[in-house]
Image 1: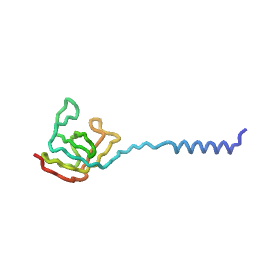
Image 2 (image 1 turned 60 degrees about the horizontal axis):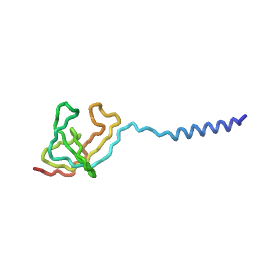
Image 3 (image 1 turned 90 degrees about the vertical axis):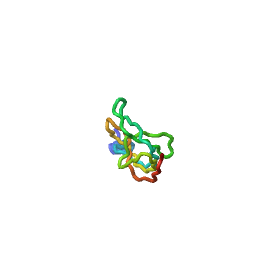
Image 4 (image 1 turned 90 degrees about the horizontal axis):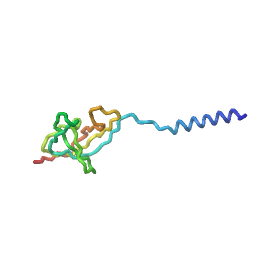
Length: 117
């Protein structure tokens, strides 16, 4: 028969390593700060195909070649015919709304505002 102390210590070691090896899942939104260019013209933005079209805006994050279409940027009063350089808080939502994006942009600061024809 095995020594009960050895069995107990083995059990404690197994429990210890099994609990420290489990990673916690992160169930919170994650926010990063990005800089972006805001296009100088409104765009037609459709949330779902076949639904009403609204005025939207386009942004291009620094170091990206793609323009992203958005219905809005929170706390940003867009004026058409102006190109903006902005600093934004880009939040990745863990539980996004069913009818929306899993990314939300919020204005942090307007870095520049340039009139465009």
